[in-house]
Structures are given as C-alpha cells and as structure tokens.
Length: 247
Ligand code: IPE
Ligand code: IPE
Ligand code: MG
Image (cartoon, rainbow, N blue to C red; front, side, top):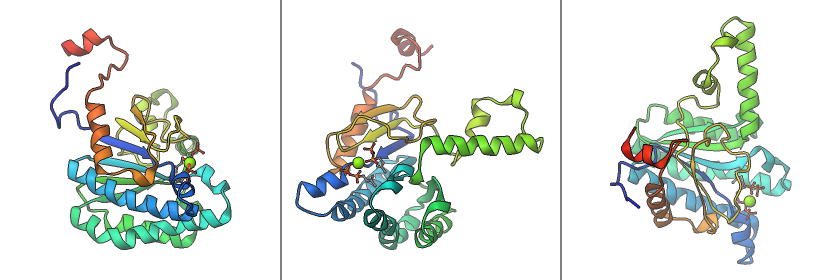
C-alpha cells in the first residue's frame, strides 16, 4: 500500500461522535455526570490538537435530538457543559482565530445554554482559523426536514425552481452551508453506528470506529486516526486503477 505524504492527505473535515462518557464513568464507580465532565476535558484536548494539526473543520456531536429523552437530571447536566467549556476556552479560541459554529435546533436549548452558545458564536465570528462546530440538539433527519421546509417556503415565494434543484442547491439549505463534506468520521465508545449524525455530509466519509471511550481520547489517538485515514484509498465509485492513474 502506498502511503502518501502528510499533510496532503489531511482531512478537510473531521467529525466526531463522542460516545462512551457514561460507560467510562460507570466502570470507575463514578456518576454519568462525572463522565460527561471528563468528556469535556477530552473536547479541550482534541480541539487543541486538531487546531495544531491544521484541520480546517472539526465537528463534534455533543447532544443529539434523541438525547432529550434521557433522564432530566442528566440532560440538565449536559446543558450546563457549554457554559463550563466556553468560560475556560473562549479566550484561547479567540486568540487562535477559531470560529465557533453550531448545527441543530438552538431554539430547543434552555435559555442559559442558548445564550452561552450564541455569545461564543458571535465573539468568534471573525475568526479565520479552524471552524469548530458543535452538534447541539442535532439530528440528521431533522436537519433534512428543516432544509425541505426552507426549500418549500422559497419555492412558494418563487425563489426556487424545482427543476433547477440539484445537490449543490440542496446542500445550501442545510444547517451550515459553508461546511464541507466529512472526510473522516470518528466514533468512540465501541458502537458501529451513525446515530443520526450528519446524514447528508457523511455520504463518502471514511469511518473509523474506536473501542476507546470518549474521556480517554487524546491527541495521540487523533493523530493515529489521521494516520489511518492517510492510508485509505478513496475511490468514489471508480476502480482502484483509475484512482491511481489520476484519471
Ligand atoms: C456520549 O456519551 C455523550 C452524549 C451522548 C451526550 P454517552 O452518555 O452516550 O455514554 P454511554 O454511551 O452511555 O457510555
Ligand atoms: C450519539 O451517542 C450522540 C452523541 C454522541 C451526542 P448516543 O449514545 O446518543 O447514541 P446511541 O443511542 O448509542 O445510538
Ligand atoms: Mg452513548
């Protein structure tokens, strides 16, 4: 297998399903909330590492639309974490030029969470460094339905011609139109499933499932994932021979 030179094969967009906080905590006799707090520390490490490595887009699945069905106490803890995270990390994010974005239903977040998130987005809007996207109250199907709703409204107003609709026009209706397709999708926590994450943008993503629980994930694991990515051949429906000859 040919190993191509770094950083040519650096993914433009890495997306992470940060799973395993609860099991990590339970295995240590800790509460699930302790697990989520340890998960925030992993977010700090991985965000720094991704920025140091020059990854332009990093999307982290922090809370799914299905996670609302968890016990209220756990949901309440999770909804406090953005405050804990941004209180400590926002100055460094601004310093690094990181642009913070979110995907998902901000309108469903409690007011204190929403205010924190919107403040972080507003204060990093001019950032020209890494784009750091948090999936908050995010679900892939919900995002597609919202996109369809916006399209129907535009059609009604005469701003969208159904015959002209193509994949590019469709993608412009998604939550964060500037976000490129996912190149590398990482899921920690040992499960091999997508759990309603970024359904449109993972169409041709390379997927890496890790047995490691999210609170244990660090810079070295991210680097190993990038190494694995580098050695994959992305064929997009072509034959291997076509890809190698650069046809
Ligand atoms: C991921 O960890 C964090 C969220 C889904 C909010 P989990 O809380 O799902 O941890 P496990 O899967 O129960 O171990
Ligand atoms: C996926 O993890 C959602 C996040 C990491 C935020 P879950 O723990 O909710 O996924 P399932 O329920 O195991 O599929
Ligand atoms: Mg889980």
